[in-house]
Image (cartoon, rainbow, N blue to C red; front, top):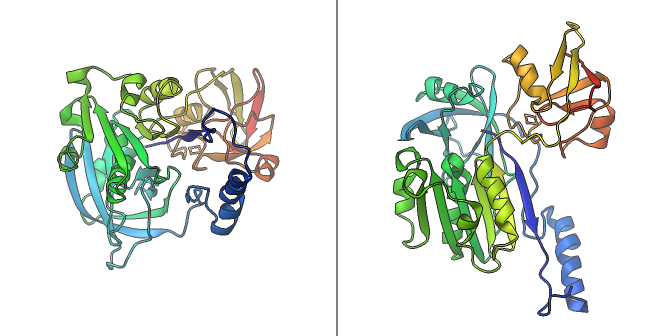
Length: 364
Ligand code: FES
C-alpha cells in the first residue's frame, strides 16, 4: 500500500468575496496560523505533522479474518498485552514483514482501543509481494515488527465533511467516519469499488446512521467520476478522499466546480510520472549502467534488476528508498528531503529523476 497526501484549501473571503481586512480577522489569522502552531506543534486545525518513525513495536497477530474478495484484516497486539501507542483517524503503521519488506497500512480499527491495532490488506497480484506475504505468511500467532503509528492524512473536525473511499481506500476513511459520527458532524460517506463482493466492511458500514452512506459498486452503477462523487458535498464541506489514482485525479479535476471548500487525499498507488525524461543510472559497485525510460521511475528500474530493492510508499514520502548519489545532478521531486540531505547526495529514487540524457551514479 502506498500513498500520496495533499491538501487544497482556501481561506474564506468576506460576504462580498474580498479578503477580510478587519483587525479581529487579522488577529485570528495570526493566532491560528502562528501562535497556536508554535505552542501546540500542530497546524491551525490541531493536526500534527507526520513524524519520523518511532521505536520499533513488537506485535503479534491475534486474529485474522477474510473481509472481502482478496482482503484480509489482521488484529495486532503487544505479545504481553500491554497498551499500544495512541493514534488518530488517518494514521498508518509501518510493518516490517518477515522477508524484510516494509509496507505501510492504514489503521482501520478503533483509536479508543489501546490494546489492538487493526489493518486490512488487499492482495495485489503482480505487485511488490508485500500484500501476498501478509496474506500467505501472517497467520494468527505470527510475530511482526512495526513502527508508528504515524499520521500524514489527519482528520480535522470540520463542521461538514464528505468522505470518499475507493476500494481498500476505505481503511483510513473508516475511523474518520466513526470520529465524525462521534463528534456529531454533518458527514457523508461514499464507498466505491469493483463489486460488492470486493468491498470490505460492508456490514460495519451498513450499521452506520442510515442515509449518510452511499455504496457504489462499479458493476451496478458504473465507475463514478469526480463530479458525481463530489455532488454530495454540502457548501463549504471538507472532502477526505482515499483510493486509486484515477479516482483521485478525477476528484481533483472536479473539485473547483464543487461546493466543497477543502480537499484532503491519500493515494494508494505509485506517484504518476509527470514530464518524465529518459536518463541513466550507474551502479557504482558493479559498474552496471541502467537506462531509465521517460515513463518509468528509477525505482522501477532498480526493482527490475533486484526485486529486493527496499521501498514502501513509492511517492517520496516514507524515505525507505533513499539512496546516495556519488555523481550527477538530481531532479528532486519529493518534498521531504531537507536541503542538507540533498546537499549530502540523498535521493528518493521512487520519484526523483535526473535531467534528460544525464547519468546518476548511485552508491549501490
Ligand atoms: S518508497 Fe517511500 S520515499 Fe520512496
